Amino acid sequence: MATLKEILTRRPVSATIRLTVPAGGARPAPPVGPALGQYRLNLMAFCKDFNARTQKYKPDTPMAVTITAFKDNTFEFTVKSPSVTWYLKKAAGIDSGSSRPGHVVASTLSLKHIYEIAKVKQSDPYCQYMPLESICKSIIGTANSMGIKVVKELD
Image (cartoon, rainbow, N blue to C red; front, side, top):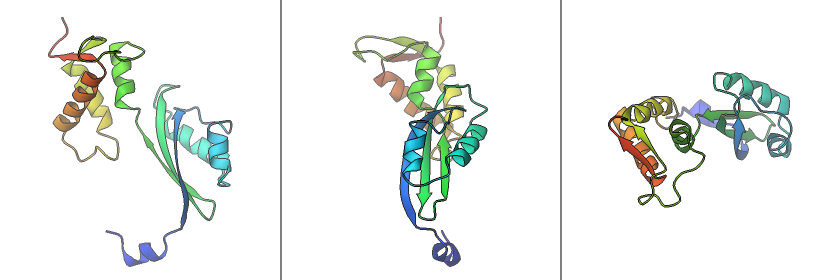
């Protein structure tokens, strides 16, 4: 719950910008430049800050970033870890899911893979209070919808 002082000093928001930027690859060029430039935000400050925050990831890892632009030309942003589908495709070694999920199996993963992905996703702001088991179930559901079969152990 916000205090009265926080509510009174809240800055008016001019926009919320959602982008997918490669880890450590934020540059003032498109797509970042035009998206932030139209709200007169400091491009170089964002690029430096984003690249510093994502340096622990491999280059070219797609990172979802939500930027809140304020009317006084300042901004805040949150970086989410890559999507579950990206992790599943990487772990399975495939470029895309099955064209007919439920009929054609694109690949197979073990529960250990699912558990490792869930541990990474647990650090995301919207998953941090979820039990690991719930995150795993969600990931298994995503894998099934992509045509990736989840087994106890790989043979």
